[in-house]
Image (cartoon, rainbow, N blue to C red; front, top):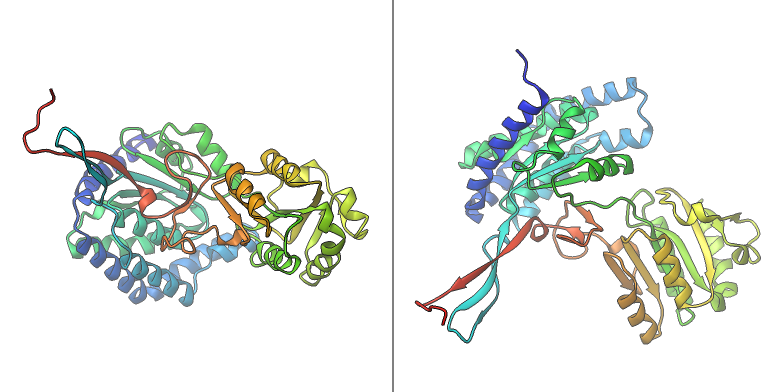
Length: 420
């Protein structure tokens, strides 16, 4: 008799809980040996992984999956090498587990501090990109956690091949094999079981389209680390250097289009609109970017399409940009408060007071001054790698790296003190 979806997830969860207890105590040297061996096995297993990926690619084409999804799904020798390099890089990162911060003596004689500890079992739900299987497992285990990985059905063969390398390496270095578990069936009901596996799973991290993340956020009984949209703004203040503003705006929009930290709306102070919009329009046209502008901006560049409220609230992930001319910093902050998604916002200005106001008053996971929104990334922030971006306020905000996959517990060191 076949198992129910609930029974399958109960087995996975219980095995993950047991494995995570061992991972909590695993020494850094063992975790790093697993990472470097996993990287070697991925390189040695390149042909097998490519064959598995070819099966996924064939099935995806037969299903009529669009070109962008096919590109994210496809593995090449270079992409597998990049995946392996990523594991080596994570092995070189400092291990946060067991670190004690803020240790101080209290008047009673005790010492009080906070120790970094793993979260426990992390459920990762993602679409398309098979490299996430290796990336997510590496970050989860280096930070002392166990993980349950549920990739998209379109990548099932690729994910199985990659997970097999990771699990084999765990056995060879003496760590629990079930610290990495792949949901090996494609039934979508298992997603529902995973996000409701309270008591077995401690955190859910989704990576994918808005519809997937909205469903998980709405239905999960396990806490979720997530972001829905990346509606990022650059505001060009009256005191901005125009050349700097143009360079930042072009990089924020055109460096890569389909990423969550790309600029979607450019706000320009009215005093700079006449000077900035013509060269901006020319550079955007060279890149093939469609612009949707407010009425005032279109008096300067009549070829731009008219923007509406829906445009201000849209994450395009495409060569499309909204442009609005604003009266002042207050109006720029109001616009961001109304339409921003809390991901990343940037101001370009030489005015110290304006820059400081923007940093303090704008509510987002990353707030920047004279820098491109494209820097909102775990690697660029010095985290080494990231498992995702969080726009929530609890328990972590912004790029989530190794430290974001841990929490803290209070520790007390005494010498026989008793409370009076």
